[in-house]
Image 1: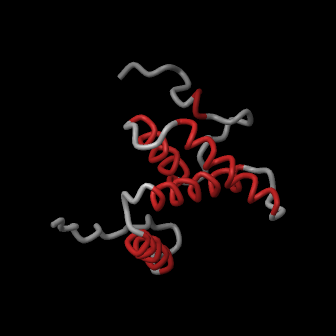
Image 2: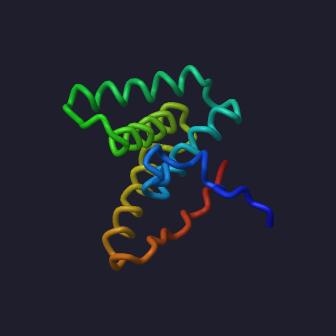
Image 3: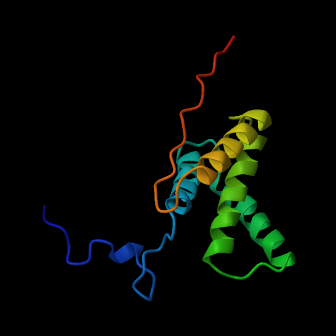
Length: 123
């Protein structure tokens, strides 16, 4: 495989560390990108949702750092998913709780594994 000398170049911070500290950060941005590229939400609506989350974090005194940014991304994605009703509030809350339980029951240093959600039936 012929990779550039620094294959992660665009994904590195100025100090040389990877842009994402945790996989969920990249996944949250990927979900937002997918929603926009699929036309489910407009880029403007995404920007407004993220901006609103960042303003709320700032008003609450959150630090201006990567943690705050990615938590705002996650919050914006969750709110948009609720607003466009791709996923119901109860279902989203159940998945959030399932992630929390999986995280709490996973030994330190091990990957967190989440069981697949039950298949939805329609009609």
